[in-house]
Image (tube, rainbow, N blue to C red; front, side, top):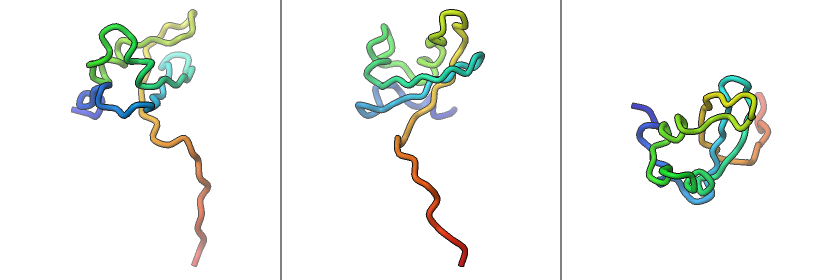
Length: 83
């Protein structure tokens, strides 16, 4: 069992972003929990079920996608040094 089978879309906080990457053409898109919850039958679905239901947005590809959680939008540089 992994986190996608253990976590429901409804368990996520409001405003949580998910990264959706096409496995075939590698197009990346980002959607929020609210946007995905509006899809029929997705409100109480597990993340792996959401992943199976989604397809690539490219009309020529329509491939399977991989879903991952986005934790923080900020990117911070390495701060440190050698002693």
